[in-house]
Image 1 (cartoon, rainbow, N blue to C red):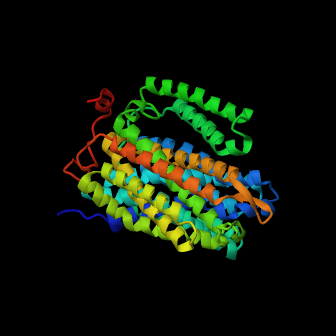
Image 2: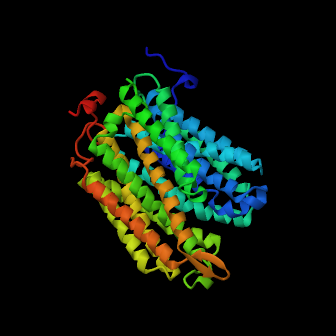
Image 3: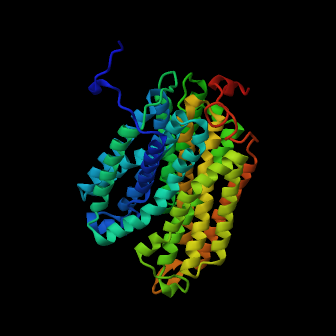
Length: 492
């Protein structure tokens, strides 16, 4: 007679793949919101905390730095020790950082909390990797398309929501809310997400991690602070020199170690290199849309082109784009399945370029500004959704986390470069209006042209990608061809 397992000891069944994907996408959106959460608050931070404007700016900069460093590193750690485990740890750190910010008005503690929040950017590539490991092939593309789009969705939704909170509640409320959402994420992941059995063998590359972190921090600090410090200032040049030297030493080490932090031989293959280049350019073009739209509509009417809109209205201008990104992520997945992710990426970059051309000629009425921004967001959705599919088609299944982490890092670098370029243009091309210096309309139009140029460059990179079978074609269990790491290194 067969024995029965007592209900107390029966393994608990997890919900199906749909709840898992929904939870991972929700986690990604919350993490993306954290990147823009404090933007509406920045002008008020000096008065609220008794700090300088420069110190307040670090609430954004430190999140960018920790996110850039931790995304590829935690992706690699997830490949080696368990993606769900690292995903949960990232969400716990995000929650702790939110609580820290909510409980203080001290600028140093706030910066520390924001640094902890930034580490959770790794949630997005980790979620994409879990989806690849756990879902059947026919479900992978739509799911990773949604997961990848959360980077844009969260940014578009985060600004208006944060602005509403700042206008109507105590500013600490948004950090308490983010802490509650972080805790909810942890509980939902524990309930729905299984641990992937796929592991990468080898030892963790500590020197490679330190070298990558040093290079990224030096480079991004120079990019983000160069406009304020001066591009020829000693500390800016010193940081750039540090990034160059440490980057060269890091690359030499990675090529010689048996278990590198980033497999540069795989990353140098055209399919991976061009995809990461496209990610950088698309990140640049996407971020210009968010930065310029919010500022353009808030310019005073005395400029002759400004609309004098409130902070909340400026944030709401990005909301239709965020909703469009949600709607278009499955469209991108179907395009990738039918014609290949290269086609979806090229189409997305082309739509972004068209969107900026629309914005170039329609920057005088609010509804036209919203329409142009939404067109750019539609192109971003198509491009962002295609990038992980291209990465996973070109790397071994055991390196998915690290490879997607590197791709997400390139998007962040593109956003950092965009922030520096936009700040430089708007600071240099100015005139006097209402007794103060403000950017001219031509400054904004120049930003649109630069962003359109970045989108066209991403289109060129996409068209240069090696042709491959559509990612939805009959291929065993994953998106694209999952060959062994040794075969990729040998170029077979």
